[in-house]
Amino acid sequence: MKAGESEGRMEAAMNEEEIHILSGMSKTEKFLKFFGPGLLIATVYVDPGQIVVDMESGSTFQYRLLWVLFAANAMGLMFQHLCSRLSVVTGRNMAVENRLEYPRNLRIFLWATVELASIAADLGYVMGTATALSILTGMDLHWGVLLTGVDTFLALGLQSLGIRKIEAVVGTLFGMVVIGYVFELFFIRPSVLGVVDGMLPRLWHRNERHDYGDWLKLLCANLGAAVCPPNFFLQSALVRTRKTERTRTGVMEAFEYNLYETTICLVLATLVNACMLVLAAAHFYPERVVSMAQGADLLQDIFGPYAQYAFAIAMLCAGQSSSLTGVLSTQYIMEGFFELEIPGWIVRLATRAAAIIPAFIVIYSQGPDVATDLIEQAQVVVNFVVPFTVIPLTKFLCSEIKMGPYRLSKPLELVCWICSGVAIFLNLLALYDFFSDIESLPTVVSGSMGFFHNWVVSIPFVVLDCPPS
Image 1: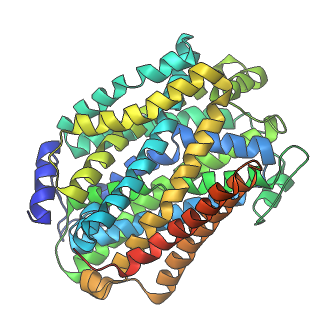
Image 2: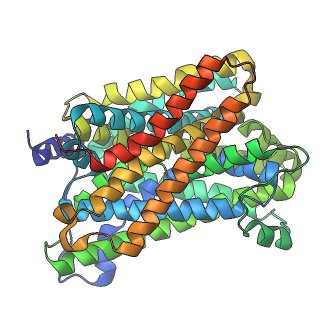
């Protein structure tokens, strides 16, 4: 079956209407036609997982991870835009490109890594929604975790509305998220010198309460939260709903307007992230936030009850909008990689169950105070997947066959490889830190982990030169 037939079937199932951009339209009309995919992507940048990472970064290392937040989000913006360029030129999304490029065994491995990232990201949505329900209704957190399975069916039902209406719904939720967090900004009294100091890059840092290992985990968590692989697959699919003229002018206009709308949305999301980090640094430090509920309680103690409820409503909206984008991305990924006509509700329910079940067990057995650690570790897992997504993407974009005259320039290609190398380097450091702290680990297991390290590093480079299926 051809790639176009696969994608056509999926689009028909989702009732996606094509949005045509004509040469006679004004610039404003064209921009409004292109506007939409960036909103869906931006909601994931203010999802509960990201907000928790922001709050923990500020409450443990004050302002000193601020530069990491901006650098990671800039990297995310770059790769989001490059995904849209790939789709505009080839007419195919990233999942289909992986299927066409790689043999079955490697394709299964790459798909598994993306699904792992989806499950890990979903954990943040689950915990955010459950925390919001706990604050607003008083229910126990572990029961709220189970209840989040219901929103999967709500998100699936919204697909029948068509892509423009989905974008409108998510855009409304995104607006409510921003308003909810902006409400907190009126109370922030940050240290200007602290903010300036936080913008100065530093590779390593520790304080009297937290060591280099905590710093490294938050470096990885910030990168994983911003450079989230499922987002790339989603954006590369969404931009295909915008139909432009297949001329050089039409293609360059598509590049331009996609960049504009994605930049606007992600800059707004980045400012929200920065404000939450600054808020935590100014008012929570040095008391580490160990749960979202604790963060809400601290807001209430400092600013009054309205701040707590604004935070909960924003968290609830963020969880719901992120769940909806998760539904879309998992379906695109599954069918793009394998051309499988599996009902969307089965795919999504399996992904959500893989996030809910361990979260419920951990929260029920160890209490709500482990929630932040759970989300932080989930974002670190997402970061482990980053190289397995951005390396194939960079390879596709550098291909003369796929991209023709629109292939990456040498400077931009170099930047992409450097970003991939940074992700691999951080992952190696995280693996070393994790296993080197277990002193009782038998020698044979340590040896096998050394082999595992080499295997993890080698896979991305195997992907570079793997022959097509």
